[in-house]
Image (tube, rainbow, N blue to C red; front, side, top):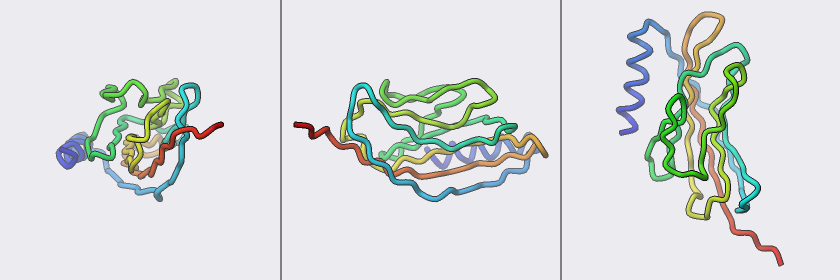
Length: 136
């Protein structure tokens, strides 16, 4: 399923006459203490004048979901962090998720570059460790 989706993204941009460059960013590690009022987020920034066209997330179960432009995320506490067009980037928020959400997530962001109309597909893995609060 993941391979088919990536193949579709590449085929779409190639058919449109875009040159596609894949960029892999280094892995990031983060910890989150479960809290109903506070959250954490993962994201891939988009340069100011570039336009993000696609944002996908791969869960630890290796299932891929589209977060932008169509939000298909299945969990209410895992959500796309939307903003106005000029400042939009591929960012996913986590709020009050349990320890079962620990694992490796991967973000894929496709952006059209303002300067030459080329497309870059940026990938980054995030190793999330969720723990229960231990106050008291």
